[in-house]
Image (cartoon, rainbow, N blue to C red; front, side, top):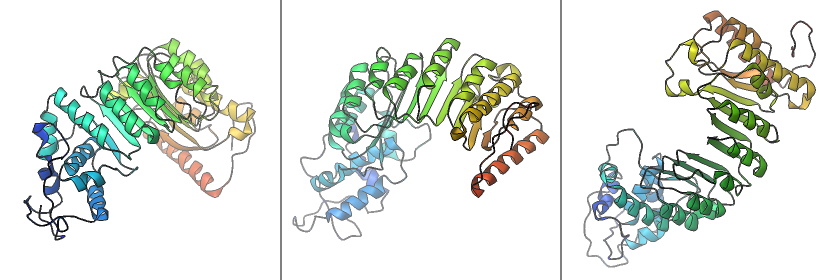
Length: 411
């Protein structure tokens, strides 16, 4: 391949063995770099060798600002050019996320990605298995799609498991508990583990969580036993996101969340039921500074405005504020800038706004989809958030004092 750097590189017999349909990925990948057309060089070995530093720089540029799945395909094409580039380029920078998916919904004009997407699942799995055995050095990985198998996940665990910090699995129906257990056993540094819609990996997910002692961030749905396992075995948890569809699961989850001492961020995505005042009062007592109580319906279709879809009502907001204020009165040390989200609460009106204004300090508020809140009330909430941010910037703290007319804290 001729290049402005005055060097060329010829294909070697021991190039990376990929599926035949992906053999020309290199040409497309390097066309993006404007290195000129591929060519066969008759020069001696000393003339076709680029400095390793230059090869690493090219590899870094190749995956810059690329989605995780695209980065994997480009790196495989890069490693398939010649032996030297494979030996140098197989080591990925730790900050790069590698994705065994290429399932982004956005249109991609790169022909290499388009051809890869057209491969059948068996061919994709072969490519993924080759990549899992070759690439090393990355600390973040995503898996998605039917081409992700136990074989691929186990290969990743063996190759880079000891360095993994973030793992995400989504819509991978072929994955089972066995490979997930192998992955988490091989990843002692794992901090973020997201698993969604894994049809065959539901039997012993609590056992998987039990092996993630250093986990700090978790997103779960399904039965509350998973939250209970996280609370029991992951003492370092600071963020929990839970999609809850049953009241019984919520009650069990709240009891478990109370025992997580380091919890700072909580997201509860409510599906198919309304949070009661008692439940919201308990939620307000949780020692979190960032609380997101969003509706599943809003997540799916933000434009729906019927009040019957609301997961929180005015009385619930009053109870939530009471819980937060009571906690701050009992534990002054827990008082901190509050971030709150009530997206999709279409039933909220002026009464809910009045309750929110009782919070001692509010630095962020998201009321997307709360269509019954008037413009004037929205301005009052904006002023409340602005005052909270100014207090935070000035270093002042809200003062604790009770009021008989309005139970809670006042500035």
